[in-house]
Image (tube, rainbow, N blue to C red; front, top):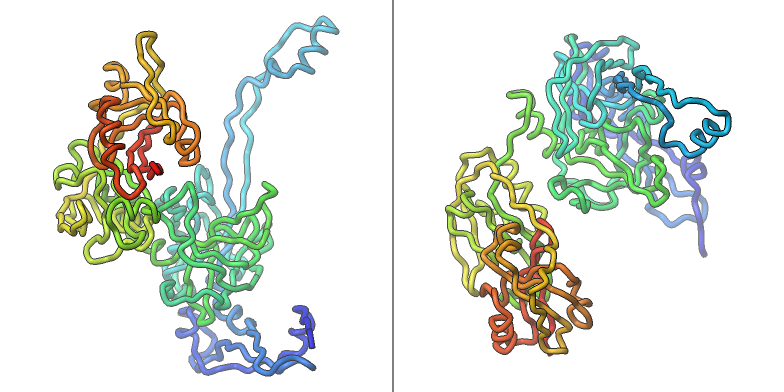
Length: 496
């Protein structure tokens, strides 16, 4: 028999059963708790609804929320948007009216505007340190923290980090309730979690859901392995805590994703794992800023085709596509085409793990890398430092004297050698510019303007050199390194 349960039906049929716990264990510490006797925490337990399969359980969050709620705060910010010339000079409708009525164009000075925003945060120490999101306090002239007991405090921004979207602020108060941090690594997909915050300015709003995925990466952010949930998160929830069922903070709610472009809940919410946030907090508390180690490379994921071309049994690690001259990677002897498999014994299961692991180490630290090169494993030690910056590049203009040459038609490539001035602009010793890419080349993602720097691990500065590598290719895949703009990537190009 098919059966459905709405949330209201389930809630109405639940018989809540408390499990043993105390204030400390449930994730909140307070110097002014009302009782020293153990208070009940929350465990999911429910009676089966009529006709429902046995064993159906749902949690009751009431006691949990009562215990952790006092340490969650509302954050309101005020900032100033500078005024300026508000002349409507670029408004075609205004220009039409002005001309029609014969009015002179008179610029007006727009006054400064006060902007207000709202977010959430949570207390991590009894003396008033509060964590929230960078984007909540960014550019704020004034930050006000409001507690659940209606007290308000003006907060000082200790520091914030845009890369991880973490900020640390401080209010002048003592004896405050504070939260216990959990271990996100121990959380599992499918577990119940709750968020407490101020969505749309509504203080101490509680929403619940499950962990939908872990280590979720975004195209524009490889440093944070987000925890994805289906907890309802809306503007104002930013910076608030995500709790597990033990009342421990496992993440900071940061952003939501939807296809409509509207900043409203759509079932996919992302949170910053608390272990990542706490490492940032430690640096902010110590120096007010975050300084990260830099290896001095660019890299790309290893897919199945690339793994086969490099002689790897499976797709893993991060393939080095460029080594910055003078960097720690360069001094350690890392080369383009190397695959970094481990850092200090930690496997690179996901390419995005590499910048996070390296970035958590301070400049000057030495790391031990396990590197796959020429079908064998090497150990390389590299000292971290700051990147000197990468050379800019782009699609070079084609000199009139350039000569375009076609490669075997099955590849779909037409190339020419880089001119000296183009090579200088790209800061490379030489290469081949793609004049056109069709067929197999286009399917592989190549297009006009790409610069081929290497083929099968060998530099190619002439068309004949590339032809030779094509002829030597075994296994049906030509592994080429291309530069596109400021980025580099390996591409496995079919030759059969």
